[in-house]
Image (cartoon, rainbow, N blue to C red; front, top):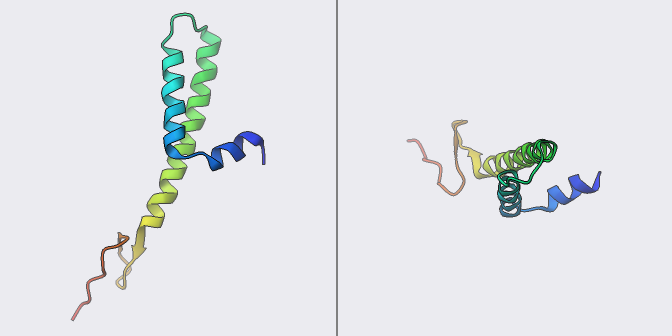
Length: 82
């Protein structure tokens, strides 16, 4: 596994969002070249993909199948049908 992938795996969502904010701020600076802007954009897209994957994993953990095979949020008791 590459070092970048390993760092992302250990990175929290908050840290990833902070990095995205920093990338956006850099892109908005007037002294940033077009090439640097494209590189930052590419990094940002990869970071967004990482965030989406991490959020998806969390959402999947938050859902459970109830007895009727329907998804319900974690923590809500399944209704017992009579």
